[in-house]
Image (cartoon, rainbow, N blue to C red; front, side, top):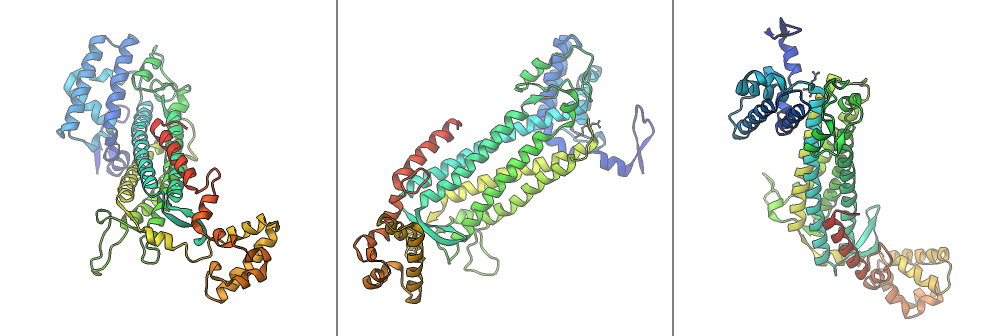
Length: 462
Ligand code: ARG
């Protein structure tokens, strides 16, 4: 089956080709940016003397009416008109008449779509940055509130050294701060205007590219018309930054899953962020954390799709680029949803203080501290490591903890271990306080880190 069309190819288009060609079901999301871009372009055309001021006014009025119709739901999207740009222009021409045909002077859908997508990504990036700030603040609040709660740190998921819950929550926060910085950097790079680049080689009209760029909040016009229409590294960069963010949220999700198990018991999610089982009546599942882990796969997929899409594209525009929108849209939707849900889950979760602190009681988490105690007594660290290792072995054989070994056993391994300082070396609270260096878990240090981070998140400065 075929359908009719006009111009250079007046006859017909194959129905499968028509379906392949159309993108309005996806790119109608860009309507707001498309209309903003068209208004800026129309006003720019008038400033350049290409159309009359009154014609520009008519176009702008018509475009505002189209926006109104889309917003109130009366606009009818027609797949036969291919994409968001043609749908809007065609309705504009119905509203304002023949002058509607002047809007596309000195413009191509190539610079138009590049502009729309940059504007859309900019708005969404700002939203992600805002959501990240909310999550950052929630983590800082929880870190503040839990400041006195101790817990073990882990390496290889084995108990390692004592720390405090706040120190751990602040680790999450640090990682998210860098995600924010990556997005801020990418946003600065994307904020240039393609308009005026036309299809590929610009335009012979004396267009006011600077004025149009400014009107759309761009820092400047893009410096090369071929690059402006053919390049989508801003999309690759943003989806890559979102993929990294997704991986980070997934790691937090993984810890929430672990911490919510009976085995760990460190954390209880609120009912609002938990789900049940259709069969097992006792179940309270951490689906929020698992779904966030799952969404990270989609985020990685979006970045990969864009990389693959562009790797063999010659300059300038190639129609392949039409396929850039779905991954970009999906990435932002997944990131925003994950951020919002995880923020709520963390804000409303209960930390099980006694389970966290009890986890310090086993696993010999102060073994390093005992070695350090021997170092202070003049023993070289390698020897101290060896001595304490042997003591841990001894303790394991007796099924006790290091501190429970009889004094004579300790003394037999090294005379300094018979002294009274051993118990304070093995006390987790003192061990944490000793780690008062930059980046460490001592109370004052973590309190300082929380204070600094609050300023950073609030001001958006590094
Ligand atoms: N829908 C197209 C896209 O998303 C708009 C640009 C079409 N340009 C063209 N020369 N056919 O890329």
